[in-house]
Image (cartoon, rainbow, N blue to C red; front, side, top):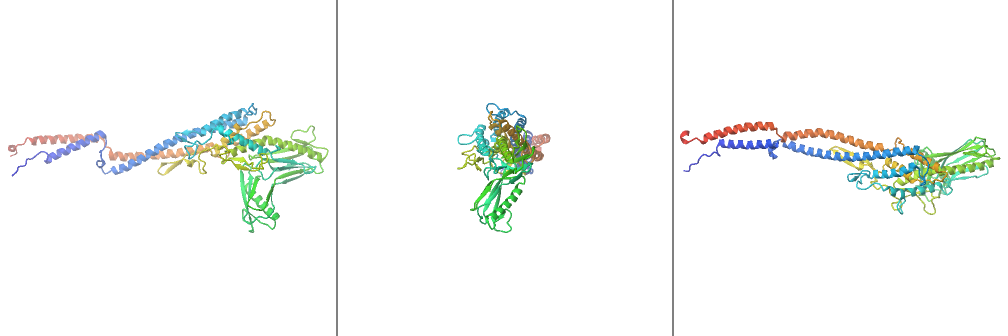
Length: 587
């Protein structure tokens, strides 16, 4: 039979020693790495929690990186916005107190400063944070604003701001230079003031007339609409009104056979005259609802085959058979294209020579009426060449920076001096100053990012936002306008222009300003700060779970290692003693 010896390896003591050696190697690895194990299975039952915690820690790290980048972008944007705000304040101060003296180029010192500031504004709006344009909305890789030279001067067939202002000035002044207003004498003793064409969006719009002239009869007739024939049921009529703030609003009315006529309609009568009366009543009511503060009809259109004419507003003063008394006054108030209004007031006078702002009382009412006609024509002309020119430039600049830009419609037979309507400018004939994202939604929403599982922030900006565009308009306007140094009305033009620019740069309730945008960005930063604070608490908790599952205490491991070394030494000694055991000793 075979005799098997007893080896050390297959004894219980040998297995124990080998197990102790494996434990010692494991503890030595833990002491070196600080980790419980180098394998998933060796981590223990809590490693599943640690894996989930690591995923959450990774997400937090990604959110942190995102917020760092966003805060950098917002910081750049705030610096740019503050620079824009500072330029606006400087410009307003210059407009309020600057000299009106014109140099050889036809500009004041303040205007020449505006030329440089406009280049700065354009440069600021084309600022990049990294590789993205911060004022371009969602089109972050597209430069949002054209060059300052292109905006002001145009390029070939593309009209720049200077050309648009010039065209609007010509349309507003008209051929006579009286702001599209006519001054006539229907009778020997009367003077009449009316628009030269109606409906028209150009020139000065007669608002009201007031008189203390002794014995005079005052007639004030607003613009009226007349029909040549009855419209059909369902025909629509559109009327556009100039609002006191310079904006436009359209009222649509529908012809109807329904009695009573529904809201937004007017009843078709038994004759064109009866229908016109109903239309006028409906239009008057609608206009009063739309703007009860003196909106004026500027254009009209219809789908009806029936002819329609609009008679312009007019006012007249008839002195009758009595001369006014010395000191009696008459005043005409006109609405201007930018939403402002100006009043021409004349005083009856016996002083020779007749003082400015007065008209001479003649030997007869007819002679006085002739003097009133001449004085009124002169005063309206001065008003047109000063305040109207300034208001026209304001309106033209707003039209240029609008989207799409508005141009004077000179479709034949109309000319600049006789035009009555506007037409959309195209990319082919008008400089498009803003080339970024032009969506109608919130500008902030054009850049949205998640900074927490349940939180997003919005930090987009568009250069065409109201606050920024308004500043652009004011700076560009002063930079673009020139006035002849020899023009006797030059000082009046510059004064009227400066006062309007200063007013436009004034922060008013309900109107967006630069600080509103900065406030939105500050709110985004606050949201991110709150998210960061929450994430730091979560991060600490998740890291603790990972540490407890994966890390070991070096002190504890060292203690276990020392104990293990003692056990292993004892095992080796026992093994050595057993290795010396002989059969004789065993027996």
